[in-house]
Length: 238
Image 1: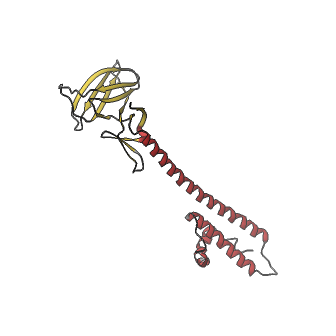
Image 2: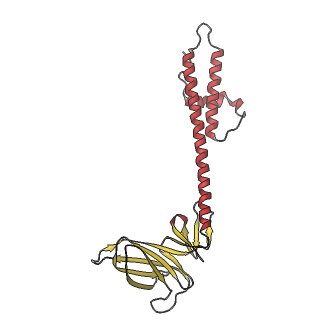
């Protein structure tokens, strides 16, 4: 029986460090996985050839067993090469995704976007939001606060199921005009029976700058940071 029959992948990997040291500089590979696969396979072939050269002519090795071993290690070699190729492909796709996201972010520059978020800039005497209701609301309390959390304006209105628009002209509850900056809208909606209605707030504003240095692109809307994934739509400013 061949002494290679009990040889496993881990055994060959261990033998690689001592049996193939002199040939370790023969070539380089595109990845460590591919290099390991080639080294394991080469080690097996070296040991097999050594065994065949020193076999007993009166008791030759079982060729069917050797053929099976060769087929097994060839499949292992191909599988590890495929894994290496898939790893390289995954890395390439991630790089491509980054390029696509950056391109999408750049397309929003100078446009008026609608994005998830309750903070919006007050610019040119106007701050705009949308609030989306799960049902018709008999009462919708809208409260605007400044950066310090102070309530500067509030009003009560009604709302329809779906998207509702709210534009604040910067006039505060005391009649004075608020300075430009970032303001936050909170929405509390109830139906005719006083039951709470779930809502979601969206902000709007013109994208004035981008940050493409991180893992995810960030849009700047006059003091408000907006993640690219939060953008729901855009309209070109005329």
